[in-house]
Image 1 (tube, one colour):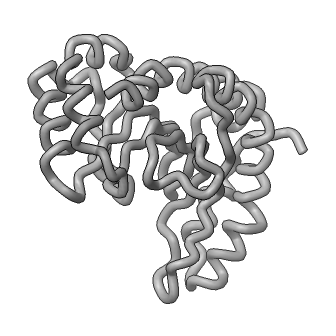
Image 2 (image 1 turned 135 degrees about the vertical axis):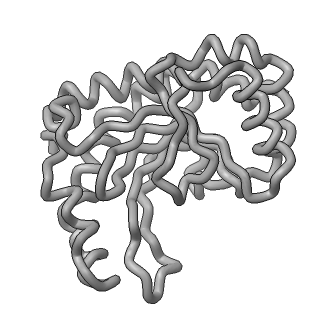
Length: 209
């Protein structure tokens, strides 16, 4: 299956009431598209990173009552899991799509990664385009446009990521459901490749401490 793009139906899954019903929507409507994206991006991302990357699709297995507010796929070098490693994500909330390089709170060495980025703050700032966004919590929709951040602001976020146990650091892009870029399958794949090519230098820095 080749990826054909996202549609309003994908985002409307998050208006389905109830855990079981929403999970069925995620599994039948969104996850086949995630698998198609994985087939198109995994090899390219492996070449970009220099490591064999593996596709992981969120299962939301721990949920027993509340339906997911978002869902995602992740690319990681570890076949067994991705949350304890720097990884790449593509996913949906009801009001936007995200493409991330994700450093989340479960990283066992996130302080070392943050310190490495802080020690190279000018280079880090120059690597992140102004039209990207940064989030400190993957469970929240909010993200800060990079163009609004000074180098000192970015330092503050990285210090929080380093020093606060639950703090995270995600860098990437947001797209609205109406954006024609995400509705055209091959155009989206190309945008995702370009985004990850931009983020890979930061990803590699995480492994160089």
